[in-house]
Image (cartoon, rainbow, N blue to C red; front, side, top):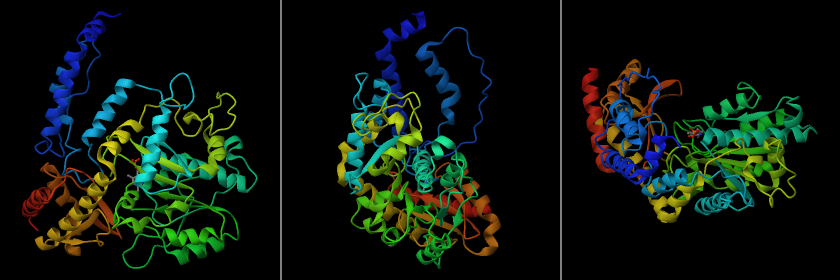
Length: 469
Ligand SMILES: *Cc1c(COP(=O)(O)O)cnc(C)c1O
């Protein structure tokens, strides 16, 4: 064994203790760590001949690279839709690295950590009050979950025409209908060879809505003259957290032949609250659902899962079967994740989720979700009271989409956001909604409190002064 590795092995406890302390320092200091940085570091490092050992690497990391770390797990990082990490999820995440399992099979002698993934999916179904008619698995993010789901949808579509697209390639136009797809779904259409432009945009409901207009959807379906199609619907659009009407879509299933996919990356968590579960009513009838865990479930990146109806497992295997896989037999009995999703080798991604669900239970997540929504409302009220801002849409859940008041200030929106974000106390993302420039603040982090809103509004006031409007 290399002597430096040997030294590290002997000192392992000391090394891990240092890493732990560093983690604690970071997390305990999140309030003071900037939410953004423009620091540039010289990254033309030459690889040293002789290793520095873990402690040497840690020292160098702290000197050179740690300043790049922003407080994205902190309470005022409202950009994108970014959760923090609960304490229990960090425990699970660290242990995932320690155990370093290759989570594939539930039956192999080489390790059946996939049973933990099965159990975690079952806990998630219970949390979201979804039936166990879904088979689920973990992937890196909602993008890959959409990819997995739409990959199986593509295979299903081929089957309707008596074709096997996975084997023979795509030889027909795949009909896709959608109203407000997340950009990642469009990216998936490109990756799946369907084509990022090859979908039909269905109208949204009139009047500041992003949800699909059911009667326009039905019109578009009738234009297809009985041909099958794939519907990509939304449970929580990123700008205004709008939801398609899943009960109405369920009704359409009785009349038409389509694959129904729901992107519920963050909006799916509406299901954990009595107050908001009506938003997802009817979603259990979908063929596939995408849900992110590194957003509202507040576990570290990279964590998301897909849910696909068990009845489609053969289509799923046709789509993703590893060509070296031995004879499968009953795919549900001789289950192996490498045959049902894009990756072969994969870490035990379920463990952080398992820890967090077991640690905080249904009530813990209900509290996180309801707290996020009430903070979004509180923030929106404070924005209006401040006087210089206007909401671009009503607050439907946890996202606040707003802009500078008055069309004459449209040109200043991005400048304002840059000034605000550069202060490092809060981070939000720019957006365009209904043709106007806006700003989006998304509340999902378990740490955020009313005190944070106070700080944020203060920072916004100062930024307005800096802007000199
Ligand atoms: C965030 C998001 C995605 C993409 O998720 P990643 O985890 O970044 O891959 C897809 N759809 C919706 C609705 C989202 O909010």
